[in-house]
Length: 275
Image 1 (cartoon, rainbow, N blue to C red):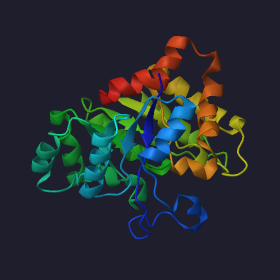
Image 2 (cartoon, rainbow, N blue to C red):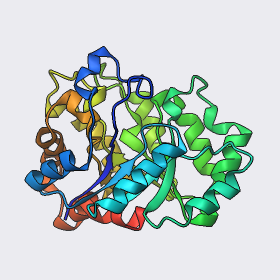
Image 3 (cartoon, rainbow, N blue to C red):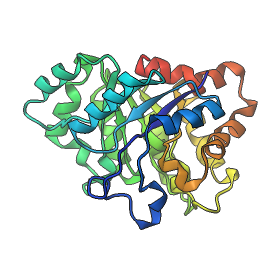
């Protein structure tokens, strides 16, 4: 079994999706479940977790509707304003939707590297555990120290680091990122998605060998019990077709035990998101 723990859907809008610049022109169109289902059938993927791309409750409702209509969408990571004074009310509202598994904020777009440590944001994180919600950490490497402090503050909260914290693969930088990843992995309530790597590499010229040093770090730090496969479709298309993205991890895992491979491809995501 294979579960893609990280992908997106959208009806393209140039204002709402302003982060898609001209260099990313391939993404300037709609990406919806029928498109992905064809890819999954060819690639042998059994289901997925749909993750928010737009920071609005409308986005959360959009993904929940798609999940209701498409059985292969096993779970949704949505968005809610974690800083809102009425957050408790909004979480209670969303608790009525069984496919909603957790939330995410696009912290990578926040200019303050310590954004996650804001008192109002920490207050929001503190309210997730009562509803058994997960939290996806989307950050750049310079935001890792704040993420480390956050997971330290909430030992009972389930966290997962998206896209292995987006290291500077194209530049070949690894040392500082690796040290922080080892630290954040020391907290047992944190998992890591092996996803989004090609967008941090040289899109048109990457080789599988480029990712091995980074995969070695997360494999050693988190172990097979706390890693999960994610494609980051359709954003991954910037670096190639879905099969070539999936094959990066397939090649790396070929010497892993069958048990460890099963955990990374599906078991860990199923357990973490309670799919």
